Length: 341
Image (cartoon, rainbow, N blue to C red; front, side, top):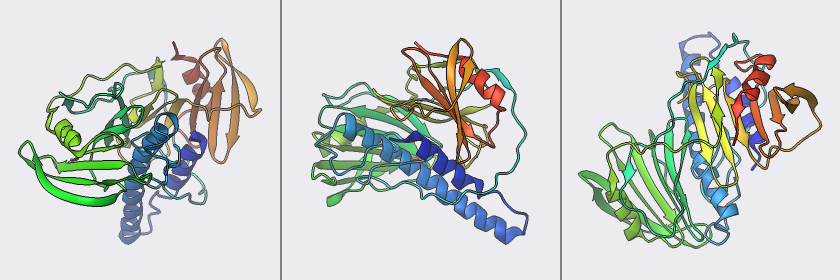
């Protein structure tokens, strides 16, 4: 997975979407492009998480996938597996609009919480992690030879599989569709989907050694109460004022967490500020700067600012667009205030 490429692709893509003031028709066209990118970003994050499971846990179940998605995994922008869903295309860099900077204040944001609580889960899966990509919230379970992903979002997309059969069914009182087939690696796969009264969609999908019957049973046992959010592997003590969680993904090997203005967490924005711990956060010979009591490496390229904090045993990276919400000095303050185990 290359988080730099993921974030850069989205930030550059979003830079093109500011209305020019040329008229209502131009504004409508811009909004149409925004909605299309928003949909692809959510799908890309789902695909990224599936790819992470493919690389770390499921070499047989998801051999056909490329490794980085929503769900499983992903980031505000994506490089994602071919076996599930596709990533948003890169677009030429546009001259960014100058935005006012946002002050740093004590970090206060709502935790990411899955809106249902599972009362039954197939055996052989690890404890789930919770993730978010814009308006998509997900639970990701990984096992030695399988995975299961439950997600809730405003849009429904099919699981990429060779379909063997499709069956109408119900989940509670809601009509649902159960689809059975094989994934890109030829492993058994199943998906059940249904729409809630609030028009949001629930999608439960699995591949490997989980049967369609188990997928249906899992769906039937989703209780209508919010699941308590798990603790994060880091703690933020400072954050841009008012910012909320726009992206979150946690795996055994990776952690990615992004904040955005509250009115932009479900849409397109240049104002992400992200913290990650990833194998992609390599050292590239940037400018050495003090970050509190640590040393950091600061690089600027392709419209992004990246600060890797060389904290012994707990290295992490913060990123934002060059047109992002913080000054460079405040980005360093933000990084210095990150608490790691």
